[in-house]
Length: 99
Image (cartoon, rainbow, N blue to C red; front, side, top):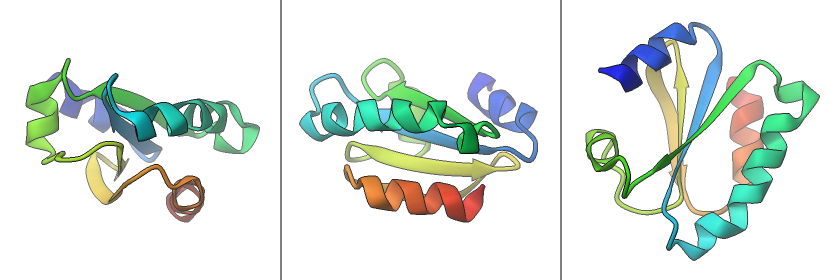
């Protein structure tokens, strides 16, 4: 599918996907920080993306997303980690770990 093809194209880059929803309060809180991280020079080799669970229910279901926000980390098109919740420190640590 298109989503998997995108992940394959990223090769060795870390891909961080934020599964979010417009009605999710914690998502609104961490969203701006997620965008800020994507603009930092040290993250220039990291691909950041967002998926709205209501707009892409099939993708959310395929990745077993049952709460928001959920961050899923991919490397070489394979999921390497995930966590749920609006924890800025955990997000920063996992990006550093898998970069």
